[in-house]
Image (cartoon, rainbow, N blue to C red):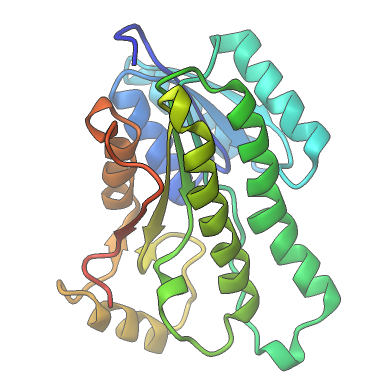
Length: 243
């Protein structure tokens, strides 16, 4: 990849893991697009923080579950920052309910963002990311476990992991890497307010604790770097050894 300033787009990056990834990429020298759906204040705060630290960032509103908005997101990003080198498909929603109680509306809510949103994001990224670029899709370590009450959430994430496996082969000739990043139990505002869930999550880590967004962002930064040029089509676990 070129040594000039890289450009990055991180969906769902006004808070949580997405924000930490955007801030880390900016700290590494990338010009970053902060994407958000509703939280404009948080997005503006993220942009202001990056600029205050000497970086470059802009905020663009777009609902990734709508293909027209995803196209506009990429178009505005390129118009403002130039061709993209890095795309991180992070936007997602968390959902917990027994399958037998889940409704069609629940299904659409979860899959519209977690699966369709990633599909639309990857479709645009595949067309636009420059040769030698990086695409990272944020899933969850939960897809390799067995948890009650998470069928819709884990199903929506399992699908995007397969998108990555196939797309990595499609984009290999252009030297673009495509990888999944799967956080484990991570401290964000999406983390369930459930002490038992927290205790179980910590116990599954080799370090007996919940992870931080910054620790996940460090792994994302590696996958987005030149150092990861020989890593593609992989599902990289970032969960402190959760098994």
